[in-house]
Image (cartoon, rainbow, N blue to C red; front, side):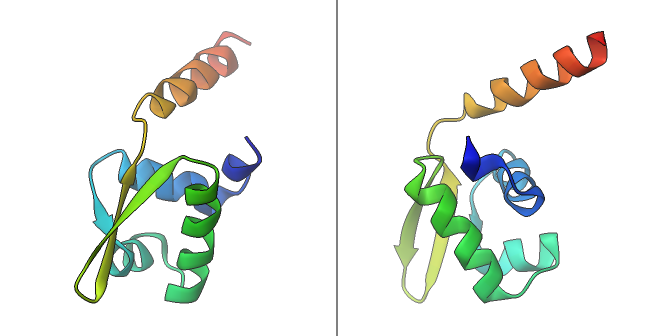
Length: 82
């Protein structure tokens, strides 16, 4: 869960919930440079949240287990209930 404890990583997971993205897309979408996004993706990959697929010079990422999104829905429901 520590891997999801940073706002930028949460934003990356949110973007990947919409489908596969390359690092270059994620840098534009979340507004960080390539090295910062790559570090966040490395944390998410090591935690088993995302998987990568290298194609030529680009690396594409997707959620390894899309049910991680259910976790966010559950957290939202708990917060809304308060």
